[in-house]
Amino acid sequence: MGKVRWHLMMSLDGFAAGPGHSMDWMSGVRGSPGIVEESIAGLGAVLGGRRGYDAIAGRHPGEAGRQPYGGAWSGPVFVLTHHPEDAVPDAGVTFLDCDVAEAVETGLAAAGGKDLEIHGQDVARQCVERGLVDEFRVHLAPVMLGSGVRLFDCPGIEPVRWARIHDGDPAQAVDLRYRRA
Image (cartoon, rainbow, N blue to C red; front, side, top):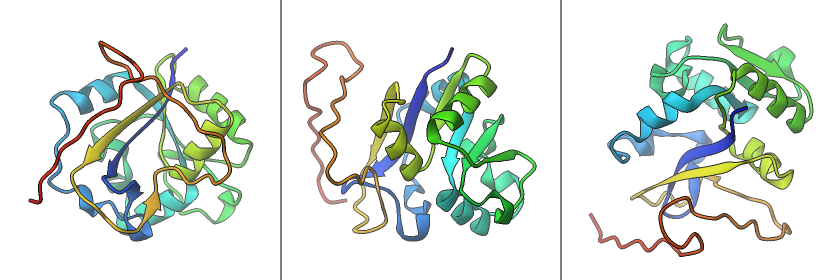
């Protein structure tokens, strides 16, 4: 069975999306060579949330603009919502009204042995709280947004520790240095 991975790009000040779930701030930001291809190769299904889906559906009418990885990947996409009846329909999306653990099970089953990728900060937060995320992949973009959708907003939770996947000490902090562009 595949992993449940939370994969995203975030700003230096901790936002995963701009105001109104905008993603235009990512324009011109490049990831490490091969990272998108690596992610797509292991991806079997996507599970996201309703707020992000609605924002994307409003900006990109038609299916092509709403596909993960800009259409470079296609496969089962699930959106967790309490109100599937009023969602903008999309032939490539299945709307789920269930517990987050059941949604993860559904996504993993549909992934056919590949990974289930979590999109959407509220769904990701619920998965982290329930211990459902196996791997967290974050790409830090050299931009500060000032407002938007926080990466992880969960007041009162105990710290969630992650072990870095790399050669060397898994508890070592990542040191970043930037200058004003």
